Image (cartoon, rainbow, N blue to C red; front, side, top):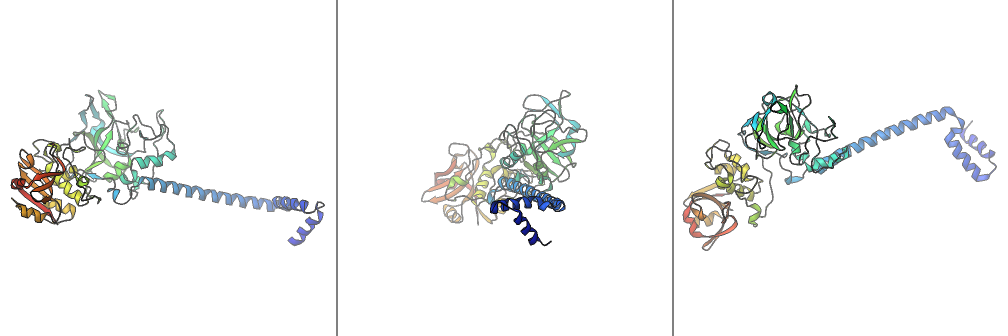
Length: 442
């Protein structure tokens, strides 16, 4: 029977006019006119459509969450840094698998710290909620700067998860809760004290060296003991560590306690390339590109070169700190410690002005025992890097940055820790007679 004839017959049965006719239409729609085959077919099609739409919605939500985690965590533009990388120079700090640490106890890493590594998942930090959920991972990645420290182009950075609960612990937990600056660089390894398993002090600096890439990194120990399958893996590290070293699970590593416990987490040494992101400074605001050699975190650090008679930046860092100010003026985000690493790439102390020029993309010219007129001409190109003997109240050789000369006055930025140090300091041009070498960049 044609469909319109069937509909007409149904309407004739109604005795309540439009109201009954409407109810019959609704009933007829849901029962398919009593046709069970049609009803079964419709039910199957509806279920299939529901499944497809559900699957697509889940996929879209997953992609949106992944994008959100990256977009929140990833710094933009010139402020992003170079994959979170700070290159400490070609010389890898000394390290040992046995050491007496800050608590006065002696600790030993099993297997002399040598073996294969495994990738570990993320642990909650002191900035995360006490109990974490998968949704909390987005904010965790942002706080720990995951996108900068672990570039998405690296396969070890593709999947992010909280570490599973183990040994009665909670989801995402560790034996000790790390601060946000330590968690990306955490290392879990097997350490013993007097033959018994014992965590070293939280935040212990540990060197992880990768023979495959000839790179080493400063990791954060003392927050977790493991891995569980310690007979196979000597240590477990976060994806950020693997990414910066250029290795992956089951690659060989060497680990040991760093002889320098002041180094920054995540600093890379060895075969690494220092590439400084351009920065923006107000060149007329001298304080915006000033560095002091006694500032932290580099002031109390030892120099990377041999030959530092007093082994601290605060005492011997005037040359590299002045050079870092010049670089900062020209828009390079390089601090004195990083400049020191560049200058010490040959293993000895000395300021290589040619290297400074290369770092800032400039040429340079120098003059010994300069006159005031020479300095005035040099300053038309920008600030001048100056070396003197007993100049600016120094007891011996000292480096500063000369900013300007006007009449019988000159303005300098002095990196010294003495009370004459600082940006925009005024001196008499009589100090020019004490200058031995000056350099300008163009």
